[in-house]
Length: 177
Length: 321
Image 1 (cartoon, rainbow over the protein chains, first blue to last red):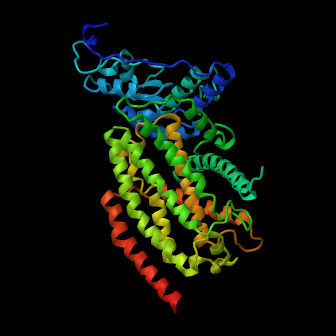
Image 2 (cartoon, each protein chain N blue to C red):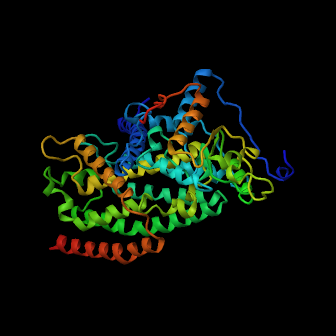
Image 3 (cartoon, helix red, strand yellow):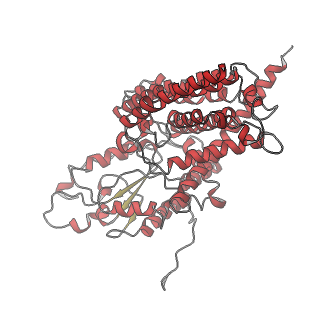
C-alpha cells in the first residue's frame, strides 16, 4: 500500500447472516436476487455514458430485469462504479456503499475504477487508484470505456457469482456477429 | 354460534380482494416495465421467464429478502407504521366497488364516500413516512405529497359530486344501474368535463408521472420513501399500484358504465375498462415529462378547480330543470 493510500476511507462491510438456514430457500432467494439487480443511479465519469447506453434501445439491460435504476441507495442491490474516482469523491462513494442494505454488490466499470486507468502515473495526487481500495468489488469490467456489451457481461458474471451458474448463452466468437 | 351471513360475505370479499391486489400488483409491475420498454423501442423484461413474466416474482422475492434499514435518528414507531398505513386502507376501498351485477363486497349507500374518505389516509402515510425518516429529501417529498394531494382532492371531489347530484345517490351499484349497455349511455357522454377533471386529479392523487413530484428522483432522490428499503419500500410500491386500480375502478363505475357493455354484461367488461384506463395511465407516464411544482399547483387552482365548479353548477341547473 502506497503512502497516499493510507488516508483513504475503508467501507464498513456489515453482512447479516441469512435469516433462513434452509439451502433450497437460500437458492431461490439467490436466483431471485440475481434476476432483479437494481443498480444505483450515479455515474462518476465517461463510463457512465456507456452505462446509460446499456439502458437504451440497442442494448436494453431491462431484458435481464436490471433496468430499475433506483436513485436511493436504500433500494439498490448493485453499485456500478462507472468512472474515475477522485479523492474528493471517494468519501461519497464509500458513504453510498455503506448506505446500501445487504445483500449488495459492486461492479467496477472501466479502467479508472479498476486501477486508476490513464491517470495512474508517478506523482499523481487526485485520483484513487482503484475503487477496490475502499469498497469490496465483485466484478471488474475492463475497457476505456467498456462497451455496453461489456457491462452486460459483467452483470452476467455477478449473476454467476451469486447463483453458481451462467444463465445466458456465451456470445459468438470470431467473425462479426 | 350464529354468524351473520353478511359478515361471512365481507370476510370472503376481503380475502378475494387481497388476492386481487397481490395478483394485480405483479401484473402491473410487469405491464408497466413491458409497456415502458415498447414505448422506448426496446423489448423490456424478456429473459426472466417466458416474455419476462417471472420478473415481478423475482423482484418481490428479492424485496422480501432484502435487509431492512432504519436510520438511527428516525422515529421507529412512525417509521415502521407508515408503509402499513399506506397499504392497509386499500382493502376497504375495494369493498364497495361493484365488479359485476352480483359481484360486490358490500352493498353500502355511502360507498363513494367510503372510498374517498379512506383513500385520504394515504396522504397521512406519506406525510408520516417523510417526516419520521429524519431525512431532508424525505421531508421535502412529504411536504410536496401533502400539498399536491390536498390540492387535487378538491376538484376530484367536485367532479365526483356532479355525478352524485345527477343521480342523487352515493351508492356505486345504483350509479351503474342508471347507465346503459351502450357507450353513448354512459356518464362520460353527459359529463365529459367531469371525467377529464377526475382523470387528471386521479393521476395526480396517486403521484403518478407527470405528477410524480413527491418522488422526483432528479430533485429529491426518491422523495418520501428515500430511507425505506426492502419490503417497506415494496409496500409503498404495492399501495401505489393498488391506488391506481382503485381510481380506475371508480372511474369505470362513475363514468364508463361499470359492468355494463354491449352484449353480455358482467365483470369482464368491468375488468376490460379498468385495464384500458390503467394502460392510459401507464402511457401518460412514459409520454410526458414531469411538471414543475408551480405548474402543478397552477393547473389545479387556476384551471381544474374553476372548471369543476362550473361543471357542478351546470349539472345543478340541468338537474333542477
